[in-house]
Length: 94
Image (cartoon, rainbow, N blue to C red; front, side, top):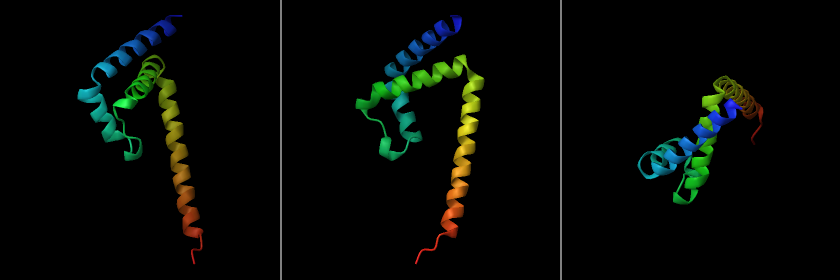
């Protein structure tokens, strides 16, 4: 029960501050990180704020789980990159 309360408080605070500071810092920071295809405008403010709040609250409450998830995703991305490079090298483009 305590974990849920801490998560909800962290979620609410992160959501509040990300919406409040959207114009000054959050939007500019997201535009530097995300690809140009999905760059955020003012219409995506709520979607990005909720996503950041969920990730931030989960990272505060369960940091080891988030770290292990990032490690597994990085390993999968590396394997996919290596297999794709190997397949492109073996492909015969005539």
